[in-house]
Length: 202
Image (cartoon, rainbow, N blue to C red; front, top):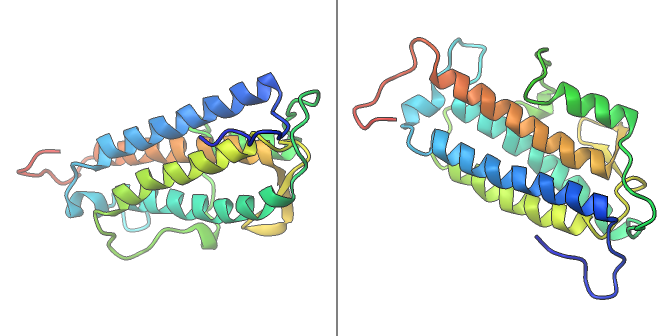
């Protein structure tokens, strides 16, 4: 994590704990993905429970795609963002809260994926697992930079539509929730009847 530079305003104590807690979740997600998918063969990674359902690799590819698009948006917003104000702790917005809950691991409703966020329909290489874990480091870097800015007043447009704008603090939790949701989905795939066995073990 990158702390604020000397002389920069620092985040409110509650905001620092909030962001650092999310960074812990990013690290846990990287470990979880590597433990789950690292030992899988290419056949296992790309196996799907049904033609229109996602396999483990597709779940990871979808998360990578969403994270990458939001990382680009956040990197654009951070240099122009207002500095953090210790007297103004982050307040979630109603839109961001609703999306974060809807995309969380415990949300019961399946949501239609925006075409731009859809994973590759082709077989994906086993390197997708390393791509996922390495991207967690990119997220951790940007989350660390976010500690120096106002999480409430810094707005970031959704890659799905520039008409949708989230508070930066909402995006940080939204992405953490979203990837945990799909890691859970990937774990369920490996427990589905018909999932390929491997002589190498899984």
